[in-house]
Amino acid sequence: MNGADVLDALTTRDDPPRIVIYTGDAASTAPRRSLLKGAAGFCSKQEHPEILLNILISVADGRMVFTFFNMSKPLADTFGTLTARERDLLAALADGMSNAQISVALDISVNTVKFHLKNLYEKLGVGSRSHALALYLKGKE
Image 1: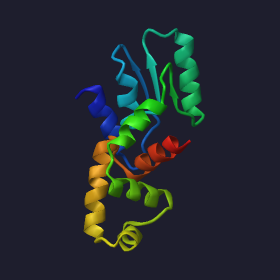
Image 2 (image 1 turned 180 degrees about the vertical axis):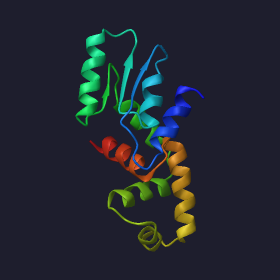
Image 3 (image 1 turned 120 degrees about the horizontal axis):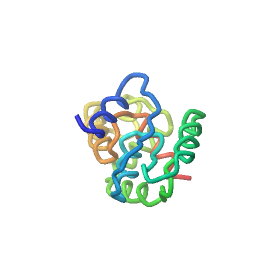
Image 4 (image 1 turned 120 degrees about the vertical axis):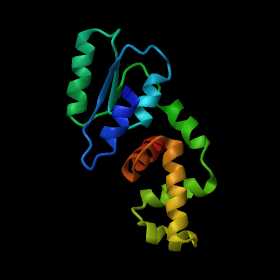
């Protein structure tokens, strides 16, 4: 099991922990992948230990911290791949609508709502409604 698998397993739990990725992976896509999989923070092993400590404290206080990482680009890139229907679903989620309410509002069956949500979660790299909504709301800021 690699780090991404562990992150997937932990973030899909009923009460997922807030996770900080501490890695030697120098790939520029590592922070983005971590964010999209539900991590609350990211720190390279090349950082000074004090930076890691500050990130851990910030995440424990409820914040998200991704050092030296422009968060607008991955969010924009991610939302650019969504269909119009998937964007409609995200807006409905932001309005707090249930699957049944979404089906009525969009004039589609509940099963079709579930199908679109599954595709949406895959594209966003998330495992839950709350993660999808968090990314959507972050992208609107």
